Image 1 (cartoon, rainbow, N blue to C red):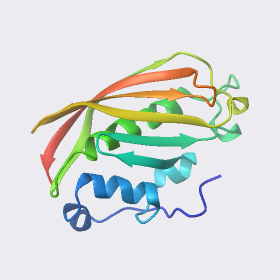
Image 2 (spheres, rainbow, N blue to C red):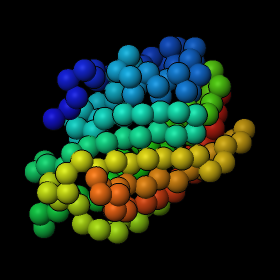
Image 3 (cartoon, rainbow, N blue to C red):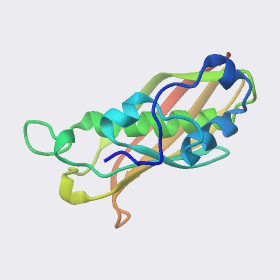
Image 4 (cartoon, rainbow, N blue to C red):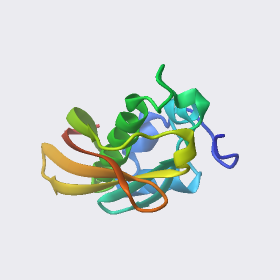
Length: 158
């Protein structure tokens, strides 16, 4: 179930240009800015943000299942794309944006509703003027690694 304190929608480009990347990502985590509608669709939440780091969580349920009864790999891919991209965004100055150029995901263990809460944590590896790279890890409540990934993002004036 989506977090009741959160709202969903988009933040205008003008408003985003007037915030640093860290202010933007922390606003999403704090609930002072709306999460994107994909977060609502998949019931994930952005729960923590710091410079170069972002955390996304979800408790998988029946809505996330593939035909074989495990959580669809697209959920893990979305969580990793989100946490890694937001980690990069958190390092950017006002008036600078980013977008995913490519990402790679490795799925290591099956995820099911019985897995319980999972956490995707992204960390920046390097962020330059034109390109940023980050890595992400999805773990369960016992700290077991379920999936991991890397991303390359384009950095551009917004």
